[in-house]
Image 1 (cartoon, one colour):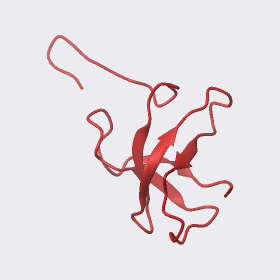
Image 2 (cartoon, rainbow, N blue to C red; image 1 turned 45 degrees about the vertical axis):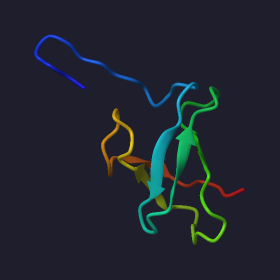
Image 3 (cartoon, one colour; image 1 turned 180 degrees about the vertical axis):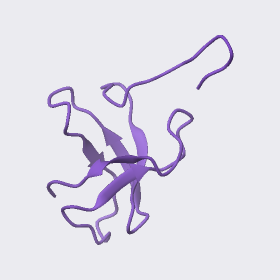
Length: 81
């Protein structure tokens, strides 16, 4: 968020926040967060078990957050648990 004399930012690498995210191809929503370890790996949680997801699927911002507008590329799925 910015104005003429002020700006406010929040890093996605903040262990205290969860960000609304979705799988681009399926539009299934969940939340993504960082565990404070590797800066290039985050965890996507709360995706319904019936969602058809695969390694390589793109994760984008969901648009519910006031800090992150919708459809910003966050990353891709590198493993499934």
